[in-house]
Image 1 (tube, rainbow, N blue to C red):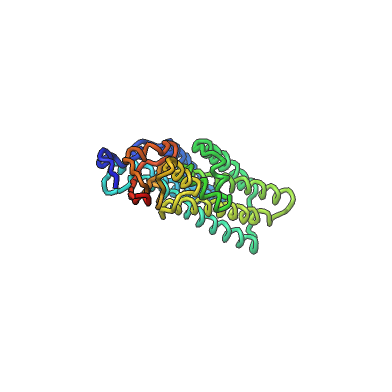
Image 2: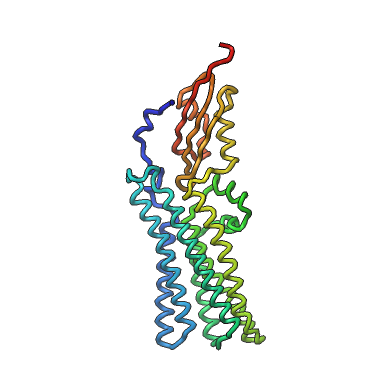
Length: 317
């Protein structure tokens, strides 16, 4: 076993003690969402509007979900140097995203249930007021989406095949906590768009069925996003092996002397863009830990590496 003595007492915070860009953005969106929630609930009670009250309560549920994401950021940062966490608090990010994904799935089920009920038993709609609420909601959530600023390719990626998901997510991990918050406000924005389309169709063409049908369509899309986020975050929480692509890169750099061979390899995520690895090497002529470690490029994201070396006898001897 080759040990790097200098690494025995190194920090395990791995940068988690610093504020992430998504933290401030999430708090801003919580403030916007909570303000809109209070306005809609108050107006709904004062003016007797069930549409306003229902949308306000919907905003409240997403404010609660966003609060979980905000808590994850603060908790990870405050406990980054806590020795009780063996590999730091990087996985709190994934845990926040996983919790948000579960809430998204619950919201999708509620949307599908309510929409199905209204498809069977239509309810009277006050079109002008409902359209106004939907437009206001769309503007507010559109602003929130812009504030969170998650790359659209990350969200689009949630629906790709499982194999491609694992390869991409393992090598280029994103802020899953921020992605969860983004999907929550995107869900609200999507609901508003579908509601506007359905309400206009019902008001001007008499297609009352469009309102609950759009709700079902929205529920399916939200469920799809939820599944993608659950898949990527659960892989991290369960210490799933990283993609074969990354494993092959590690083996290539360790074995490039033609003598050393990787006999066993374990690589898993311990935070966004952060990996830990245990590498077992068999060789005829052992190198030091530092020499093997120097072969691994920094862009692989290997922050915590343990290397075990076993010397095998040369048959010529």
